[in-house]
Image (cartoon, rainbow, N blue to C red):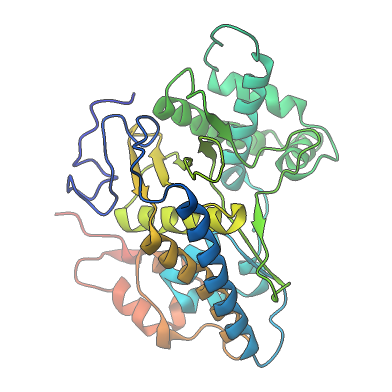
Length: 358
C-alpha cells in the first residue's frame, strides 16, 4: 500500500512539487532525514518562541475585548472554520463553537482508534500480530463499551442500551472504514515507533495534550492528530499523523497539517519535524515539513480563533467579511449573505451551488 502513488494524485495538487513537500516513496513514515528542518535544540527553541508569540498575541486580543468572551477552546475544527470564513464561524454562536456531540460521523475516528488500540493490546506478545479485521475489531470494541464511561465509549453504551441499532450500524461502518484505511496506508505490521493518540486507556487521560497560554486562563489549545511516529524528545525527531478516510483539496490538507504542527508544538513544547496526512480511500499520504514559517502560520490560525470570538461580542454573522466557498452550500446564513448567494449562483454552478460538469 505504500508504493506506486502517483504524484499527480488527488492529495498532491496535480504537481509533483505541490504545496506539501517531502513526497518520497518511503513517505514521512520511514527514512527520516537527520537534516530535517527543526533538529536538536531548535525543535525546543522553535516551540518556545511560538508559545511566547502566540501567548502575547492572544493576551493583546483579549486586552482589547469589550467584555470577557468566556472559555475558548482552539482545536483544528475551530481553526479551519475561522480561517475559511470568519463570518460563518462567528455566526455559529455558542452551539457552533463547541463540540457538536457524538454522532456516527464524529465518532468514526475515535471508535476506529480505540478498536485498533484494543487489538494491539490483545496481541502484545512476541511475534507478529495478525492484522485486524476492521469491522470485527470495531464491533468487538463497541460491545465492550461500558455504561457510564467517558467520551465515545459512553455514547456507544447509551446507544446500545436504547436499542439504537441504526446509529450503531452507521458508527461501526464509519469506524471500520477509518481503521481499514489507516492500516492500508501505514502498512502491517504498523511502524514500530507508532503511538496512537487521543485514545482512552486505564490510568491515562483521554483528552489530547493541551496548552493554556500564560495570562489567558480561559483559552486552551489542543491538536487532533491520530498518531505519532517517533519518541517525543528534545531532538524533535517525531512526526504527527492525521488520517482521513477520504482525500481532499491541497489547501484544506495544508491548513489542517499546519494547525496540527502548531498545536503539537504548543502542547508538547517541542516542534514535530513533520505532519503527515493520509487518505484511506486512495492509500496516499503527503508530508508537510515543519519549519519556522509553518509554525508561525499555524500560530496565526490559533490567534485568529480568539480574535473572532472577541469580534463576536459585538457582531456575529456579518457578510462584510464572508469568504465564499463550497462551504456556502451548507451554511445556515446563506440566505442573508450576498457574497455567498452570488457564489452559489455563479455561471459554473447549478442548483444549490453544485458544480456544473462539462
